[in-house]
Image 1 (cartoon, rainbow, N blue to C red):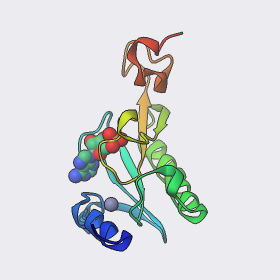
Image 2: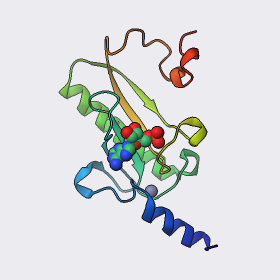
Image 3: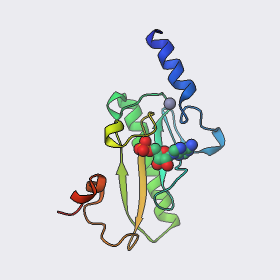
Length: 135
Ligand code: AMP
Ligand code: ZN
């Protein structure tokens, strides 16, 4: 049994996002950074994380949330400028393993969407329970 500090150190050492190579970082400010998702849902899919290791969005400090939102807005602008086929976005957080979180360092997905990228996109994030996507 370690102290909370020891446990935090172990988390940092084992966390793939804490150990991301600096060369993969695309955007950065004081408290957050972003990088391309290694297995993108659509072209341009990025992840936005606090620099501090926390598991849940609800563990973030106000300044960390603001830092993440700032990078999200900058990335959205850049994507739309670069690719005029982008007509929408899914912005998502899987918070907890029962909600689908697989990397236990809080992250926000920004998934650009283009008309026709799937047959019927209606319902979007409702698709976390596939049979409930459409209503
Ligand atoms: P989640 O299921 O919400 O925890 O999302 C984890 C995301 O991390 C997935 O979209 C993965 O494609 C992505 N991912 C996993 N490993 C890496 C990695 N080494 N670098 C960048 N993205 C990753
Ligand atoms: Zn981490």
